[in-house]
Image 1 (cartoon, one colour):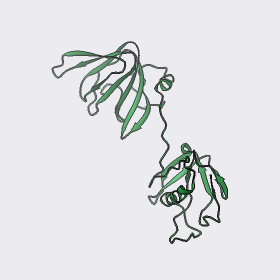
Image 2 (tube, one colour):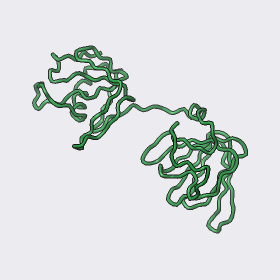
Image 3 (cartoon, one colour):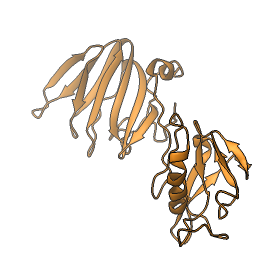
Image 4 (cartoon, one colour):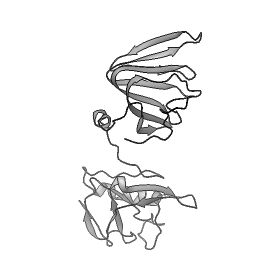
Length: 229
């Protein structure tokens, strides 16, 4: 536990102690990054337990070694103040700051829990995003439509069940491959393919965010705007 008071740091503005999921970074007109904070609690001279919180918008690093008043706040300078606090905070406490953006806490994903929220077949949901790619979850049963993707490769990982990937090779001969639970298959861009599942199958897709589920075909199963799960 660390007591932050005007006597210890006279140049500090009131602290804003916020849960990580209530902080939304946004860029100001001058290009600097500031946090938009929702459901924020304000403290001035009060003992603060930071074990599960992120401190933002504290204040600027002073121009000299001596604390000064009336400094404007910025994410970059606030991070300096956070690092100043670090030695005085209990070793079990965790403070996150990253320059120039805020570093959010990581959360694990339980696939069984996510799939339990999916009721429709052939309707992919976004579970996560990284590096311009999407991790999508989908439940499938029956036959899909033959299609291809001009610019995107796709990875299909079977989480539960099994399905058959029908596809056409370079000579347009029909081929097929069964993918069992715990296995995955990568469909290269441009290859005509069609997933088929005799029974309900849970699949995880890893593909660029721009990938349309029906590729070059648009029909009643096309979902251009995906929901998150």
